Length: 112
Image: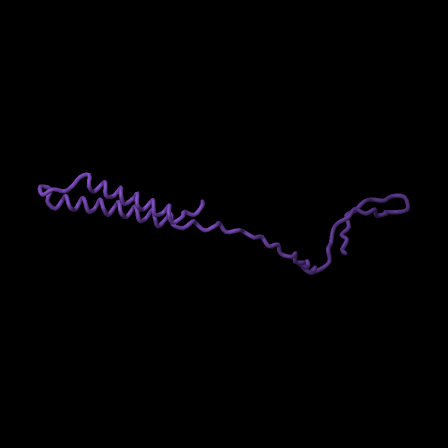
């Protein structure tokens, strides 16, 4: 959104002031209205003036640009595996000879 120049802001302010004056002069308070007419007129002037000033203040400066996110890649870190606490064992099927001719297979625990 482009920034508004001072002349554009002045023009908007003058338009808001003229609009407020037109609203206030459209229904003048008379003596028969008493205090209520003055209260309603003052409240209307306050609301319109507050809206005009708020619009001028909010549109005066452009919003800040969005923050850029920067990704920084970290170096990989080597983590050593934990030390072994003892031998690793597993079972294998091995051929066991019963005599010169016959054999069988048995499960044998092998530890490294």
